Length: 544
Image (cartoon, rainbow, N blue to C red; front, top):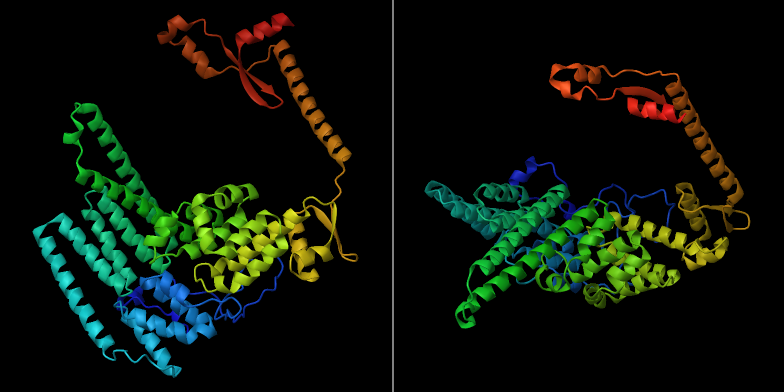
């Protein structure tokens, strides 16, 4: 049973046609494999109910339970339970424990049924009546919040109505009913009075859309939230400037208000945290839509302090630097890697938490490709347990390998494919398939000697290219010269096409003062038609 593919958001969500909360598309069962197919394949090798062996990686479930909170921790645990046999039982029991901190009764019942089906011993402190009590409490609180919202509407208090919609949306979100949660959050938009209300509404919609994996909605509301934050900052700056220019100097003791200063600093810090959170949402959404370079740019803007202290319900610093590593290696130039990641004080703090990722980046930059690829293959099983990264894992690995092959071959006129295969940790046949694909795509201008297994740079006849360029320039000059000769002959023959609109305008009674306006002539040329003044014709004629 694939629990990670069977999340239900409540009874009303059956009317929705949305993606599964956490799933991997496909219907084939593929085991973890480090073999590389030809570069034509960009489909994920991790499809369906694939299984991952993490025994050689030292991966522990505490990494997830200690780094995440809320629904994200539950989703990641269930995904691990589906795709890692060694941690299956432990992940199911841990998820059951954390589900009891929410109102997510539907997934609780599925997990409990799965544990009983596999005869896994249940915890001794498990409350057998939790499902009924939680369902009853959820219904009672839902009725109370709905009644409060109706009362607020009766009293026509806009701020209370907005908060009522937010509370109702939070209640739906806690139970996994994301569709109704978004509906409540969006309805609060009509009652948003200040930019901060708009920011809150956008953040709520983004959160629910993120769990639904509605990436277009996430990116749309991220843009709206960023605009609201910018308008708030510009308003604050303009008001501060106005206050500074209109007030008269007053002694410092009577001006400084510690409470106001602390409130302002708190608001600035809160806005910075919101901006970082928006970058995380946008980065994951761009990753999901295969815009890897934009995703890396967004992740690079996330402060380490914010990520480690405030984003446990969204992403961990270790996961973020893994995303940055793969997306940047697949899309950034070496100079960008050095400037934006390796030498960045902010990124250095992330890299300290993940030494393996740091070593991969450094070995790639130092062109120690054999070590880089070996380290990448070591952490691949861990990355395959990330539900947001795994659909793109094989594509990113292929792109990184292709960049390594291109960079490796760049300084040589010919290279032994046997040595290349050893350096790139692959077989000779797989390397040849990759080279064929790169040559077809035009990324490498080379030829393959399949018998001797040697890669040669494609010979380019520089003399032939020079002759072709000279012939092209000669033909262009000849065409221009013929056009000039034709124009000169037309002028001498006094051939012209009159523009009736200009002629009638000069003869109109309202333009008596413009009788000396020169007529314009229609002259065909080799490169198109042109209009010239009669004065120019006479000047040319005089010169001839």
